[in-house]
Length: 211
Image (cartoon, rainbow, N blue to C red; front, side):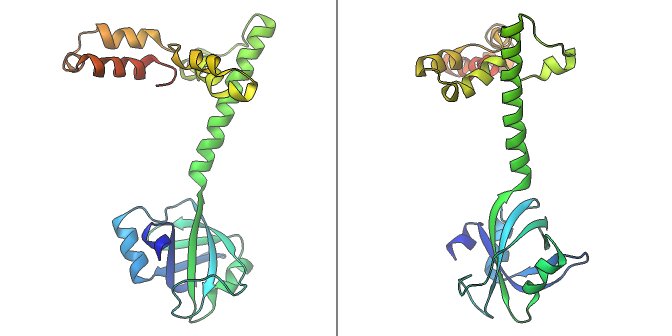
């Protein structure tokens, strides 16, 4: 029940085959439906673990039933996509309730993987520049959106054996000094309304590597 109230799980009182092979259409029980209306519950792209509960059960997943992994295809109404029709078949037991536990989100995973790839790529680019004396060629548009080399170095410094002092130096090195100057010297109305501490924070966020 605590997991349900926190949005980390829900219980489906009715489960039926969906429109496509391997899909399940689920009707949440009253408590789960109320939680999903009030806060972020299961969302499209979430990976979930499914287990069959006895009729009217309110907890468990115990009793040796195997867990089945699925993905939330539609958040509301709740449609789950299993790996195959065969994987979904055991969950269509008449009269049984279904426990659905949130695992991770595909969209968030892809963003994390993309961020790691970007950081490593920038570090490799900087390494090539140091070794060859010239950076590999890249078009102007790519350079405009490229991750700061200083930021990439700061994020990877400890895993590369750098000292805490090196990390502190990298983290306080301005990555976009021009942006800092603009904030502090532009005289724009929005900035004139800030006190000194707020202006310093804006300048750090605009041009600093890490804030």
